Length: 237
Image 1 (tube, helix red, strand yellow):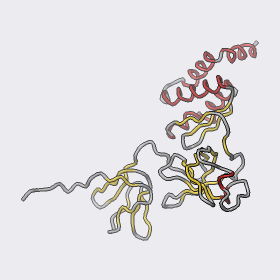
Image 2 (cartoon, rainbow, N blue to C red; image 1 turned 30 degrees about the vertical axis):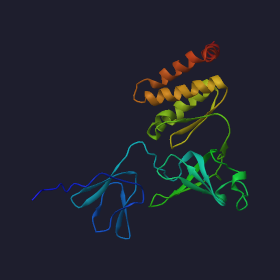
Image 3 (tube, one colour; image 1 turned 45 degrees about the horizontal axis):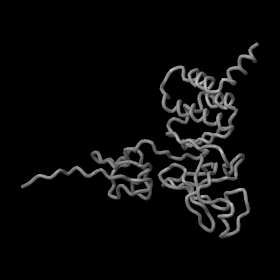
């Protein structure tokens, strides 16, 4: 008799997918609801002995309550918008969670397809469904500037210790910069300065493991914007 491998094919799962309803143990990146095991991250289903796990696929932002993110409107309903926040699933933004009084069916007057919005993650439940809001301080629709996308895992390097890296870039380029936890960054300022700030961010992304990175970035910006170095020199006199 021909022997067949019992090894299952690699099955890609998304948050909320049922992994097991036969009583297996919940392993890594899973959760239990009503006795069943579900996936909590985007990844590959993996069964080992009597444990069911999910091996995460890299590069995917998983929202956490309290995160501030940049989202893009991708669909409009009569009482909500659907927002791409760089997560496995889009996030619904309800009319009750925006700073305007929006009549039913009038949503496109306030936010339209392609608009970029600054949001806060209100809640992520056990099945990874996301609730977001625009009603917190400083949250708004983004106008102008450039949007840069980096892996969300590099966000902490862009911000730097106690915000030192991003504050230096802001000071040297005179740009307004907002770093979303989902890896999207908004940069706004004079065209030349904005381009330099974006290039500096990309430099940090590419050299995140380098030593003395702050000094390298400072030197890069001052070489690109000589007036910055001149002002620094004058300030030291």
